[in-house]
Amino acid sequence: MTDCHGVGLVSGDSYRLLREYSGEPFCAVVTDPPYGIRIKGIDGKQWDNGFPHPDFWRELLIHTEDSGWLACFAGSRTSHRSAIALEEAGWKVQEIMAWIRPYAIGMSGGLKRGWEAIILASKGEPRKLNIDSARVCGDGLPRWPSQELPDNNRALAFQRGHPKNRRETRSPSSVVVAAEDAGLLGEQERFFIVARSATKERGKYNTHPSVKPVSLMEHLLTLVHRPGGLILDPFAGSGSTLVAAKRLEMRCLGIEVDKDYYEIAGRRLEEVQL
Ligand SMILES: C[S@@+](CC[C@H](N)C(=O)[O-])C[C@H]1O[C@@H](n2cnc3c(N)ncnc32)[C@H](O)[C@@H]1O
Image (cartoon, rainbow, N blue to C red; front, top):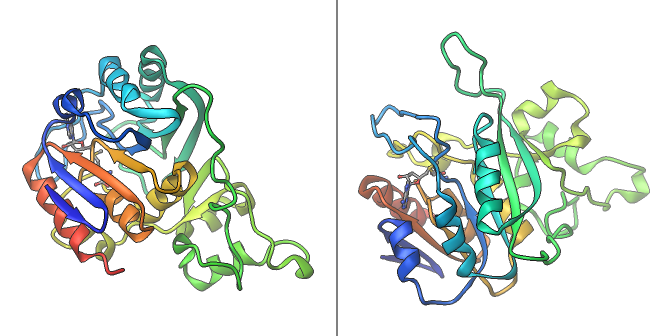
């Protein structure tokens, strides 16, 4: 177990660990489980042959606070099955967000996968999402880390509307896109813009094939977090959720079954400077 400024990482199988868990309920779960699309990275590992069973989501529901949120990534082709598994387990699906990734991995002879789903579900009636905290902020307002973007994109995010409203903010959208791609897609105001995951951010040593941008994880954490609450990522991978939580000074617990990814996540976590 690694513990770093309120962010903990456990090595093990989350199915088993959750069954044995008797600690504080989670205010929210933010996670990126296997999609069941047989991703095979350069490291040759195979952890993506299936996706979580309704029994797992049922167990997770037990350990989540009433009105708590789940933000769960899912593959474009298999997202319907993930959503049904969640509903079968008793979660209420509230929204399905799209993360657009034009640089997506291709399939030989098939369509390139240009988006991934983020299913937002709740335990019972949900508490309000933290929309105000997740708005794009202008100059003079508290800085939102994901808006540390190249100049033209920052201008795009900060200078909308009448000049007298420069300090106004933009509400988050259900469509998220990397800053570098927003210009290509046009009508930028329909999107929430995050920074793409650069090698520097992942760590050169990071061999995980499915690393999510930290700014995207920060955005999701901000939306679903309850102040003082504990967040869980039961499929931590190389630790992007944990890195984001540490940067935002949120309490978070991650579980990762693969020893190599566990080591990578621990190293990334330790490298975060507060
Ligand atoms: C899509 S990856 C997560 C990637 C992560 N979001 C990142 O940015 O690095 C899913 C991870 O879940 C892990 N995993 C699969 N089954 C698990 C289980 N039963 N318990 C804990 N971790 C598991 C896999 O080893 C894999 O690293």
